[in-house]
Length: 281
Length: 118
Image 1: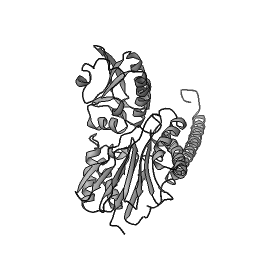
Image 2 (image 1 turned 120 degrees about the horizontal axis):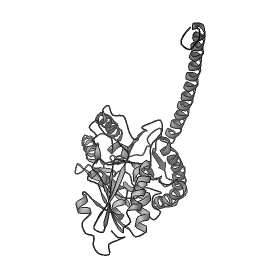
Image 3 (image 1 turned 180 degrees about the vertical axis):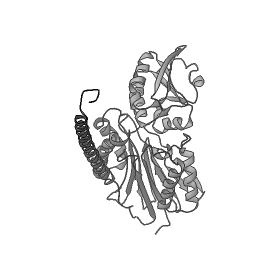
Image 4 (image 1 turned 135 degrees about the vertical axis):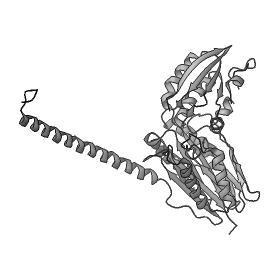
C-alpha cells in the first residue's frame, strides 16, 4: 500500500492511463501543428504565387527581383506589369506589420493595384487612386508603402513614384556615382490628402536602379547595428562599379545582408528589384 | 526590447512627451494616453536614442499625428538617430512636422502664432 491508500497495481494502471492520455494529447497537438503548418505553407505559396516566376525580357535592359518573407508569409510584394503601349511597370510594396497581419493587406493591395494598372488611363494617377482606395479598404493603422517605376524603353527613361519605401538608388555609370532618388511620401492609405510626385531619370548604358524594402536597410547584426542606407549603398556601388548584371547585384545584396546579419534571425521581409540598362540593341 | 513607455512633462508652454522602448502597434494606447495628457497647442514628441520604431509603430504615430495637426496642434518630432530621422523623411512626416536630432533644440521657443503650422 502507498500513502494514498492505493495498491501498487492500481498505481500502475493509473500511470498507464496517464501515459495513454499524454500520447493522445501529443498526437492531437501534433495534428494541430501539422494543420497550422499546412495552412501557412498554402498561404506562403499563395503569396509567392503573386510574384514573378521569371524576370521580364526587354531588349537593352535586364531585371532581377527577389522576396523572402521573414516568416512563412509576410507583407512584401514585388511585381511587373507590361502596359499595352510597351512600357513596363515594376513595383515593390510593403504592408504595415509582419507575417499574417501584413499578408492580408498586401493581398488586398495586389488585387487593387492590378485593376488600376489595367484600367487607369494614366499611370501617373495610379498613386492617388490607390491611396484613396486603400484608405477606405484597409483596417485602421494599416498602410502600404509602394515604390513604383515605369520604364519607357523608347526614350530609356524610368519614372519613379514612392510612398514610404526607402529611396531607390541610381548608379550613374558615366560618373561612377550612386545617387538616391529622394522621393518622400506618406504610405498609401495613411493620408487621403497626400500628393505624390514622380521623378524621371534617364538611363544610359551601364546605369543601374536598385529598389529595396525597409527590411534590407533595417537588417540588424548581433551588435544591434543597422545595415542602414549607407551600408547598403556601399555594397551596391561596389557591385555596380564591377559591372555586375542586375541579377548579380541582387544576388550580392542578398548574400551581404545575410553575412551582415550573421546568426541573428531575419526580422523583416527582404525584397529587392534591380533594373540594369545595357547598350541599345 | 521592452514595449514603449511615454512620460509627459511641461517646459514653459510646450508639452514634452518622451518615448522610450519599442514602438509598435501595441504602443498605440500608451501614445494616445500621453497625447491626451499633452493638453497644449505645442507638443514635442521626443524618442529616446534606444527607441526602435517598426512599421506598425509608424502607422500608430500617423494615426494620431495627422488628426492632431488637422486640429491645429503643432508637433515637433525628435529622434537622436539619423536612421529614424531619415525614416520620418521617407514616410512623409517631415513634410508636415519639424524633425530634430535633440530635445534641447526642439524645445526652443516657438515663433508666435506657430501652433498648427510647421
